[in-house]
Image 1 (tube, rainbow, N blue to C red):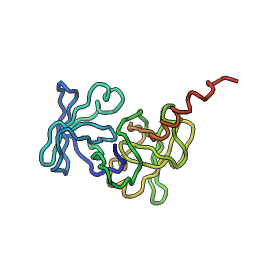
Image 2: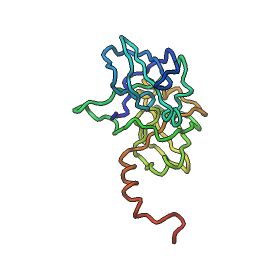
Image 3: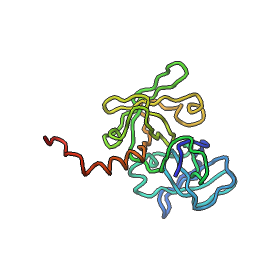
Image 4: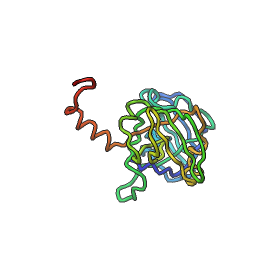
Length: 201
């Protein structure tokens, strides 16, 4: 479980195909990682395979590659990093599972005073779980839904997020990982049997 508060930005140093999937060696500022612990890379929860002073490796299996952008990652790619939360930690963002639901596409980036506004086209399975001022995870970052239009959500990045995550570099056409609020998923699942099918009178 994560909170969507990015702790660091790492850089992929090497990529290799191994038995466990596509393996990435990531340069970071941590020296106390342990094999087997979970780390979210751009919001995708992966398991540390090996680690050392300032680096670690993770591998993405085929199902992860099918629903994320990891297949496009290469040497020099920068990724948002968050270690799994510990019991007793402050929950500064929102509950994030590290399970990417779908990919979104940035349709526009603009500035309004101190905020950087990012518009993202979202698929229906994510859109139906969005509410104004609700939570959404974009590339592992916990954000608030600033505005909603059919098929599109807008988030507003504060100065800290812009400069301490990869989101400040987004441009139109970029693909991003999206994870819907887990509370909304459970509400939808619980109410589903009681909702009339679409088109029913």
